[in-house]
Length: 382
Ligand code: UD1
Image 1 (spheres, rainbow, N blue to C red):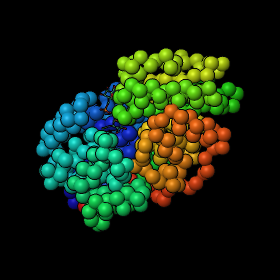
Image 2 (cartoon, rainbow, N blue to C red):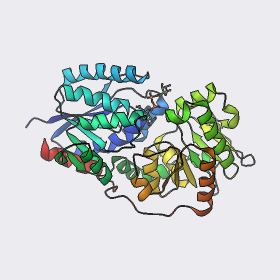
Image 3 (tube, rainbow, N blue to C red):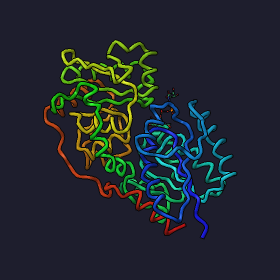
Image 4 (tube, rainbow, N blue to C red):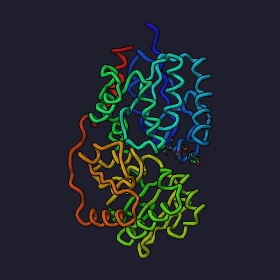
């Protein structure tokens, strides 16, 4: 029997940890010939290559080299380049993950060539159409043939949007597959020592911050208010801030550098515990970040995936947004929505630092076997 050719599409940083467990499962299964496609949406070493190395991902089989641009330019360029590859390679199925521009661009190309599309992490909804990711999610789900979901509320969202139940498969969370299979390696990271956060086996208290959403970093007042709130929190404990390149650009553009210290090279960072501060760093690799997250007293973020990872690690997470497409992290996990108002961020953080958050439970099927379930479904259907 001819092997089925499966494209696994990645493009941006949060995609790589979702692709890794799928590749591992496809390798075990002789029915499939998998092809790893990287659109090049993220291209800096720190945003892409480091993750391939950390996660043991093979070099992409196909690299489209598309790069940055406005939404129209980036999405359009990915479509143009991806269509050429589909014509020459003729895949039997295209798997897209998450909600970035690469996800929707490749799903549209596939659907118009009548190639079946599988969307991993389908059905998540913030119900906020000002988020580019929400547009990407809704459109990708509408044209996908296999919708693999991480939680029951995603199934309900899809049914309400008229998607037929036979296409929906509740399989769990591939990002958690990666987190669980990498715990040992993450524990071996020496980032705590490098940042002077560990001395003689004693780990100091610190907060961990990430920030990159356009709604938080593109407006000067909003970004200034958030950073001022963090500055206040840094009087209680130092704030470690691995910063996304677009956030660093905005901080420089708005001349907000004086609110924090910036350390260009992590190997030469000397965190001075006499001066409480926000310490901004360049983006860091997967294991270093997981290690920092698992030992943090509190995580403050506008990322989607980090809300899920902190739920598994049972670390309090304050989400600097007005909504989340991952409500299960609030009802079952450690997540609290705080918006971007400075007083609310400060007051909630101080309360959480004093009282902690109630530990709840691990969401259903976030057990490290999501990719296994996906590949089994594809094996039985294709
Ligand atoms: C994208 C995703 C977002 C995801 C995030 C994770 C979309 C619409 N957004 O946002 O959902 O949470 O990735 O990081 O797809 N840049 C670099 N180097 C890089 C990549 C980007 O410097 O390797 C800078 C460029 O200035 C670029 C900007 O970051 O213009 C934004 O990159 P882009 O891929 O458009 O969106 P992200 O903000 O990274």
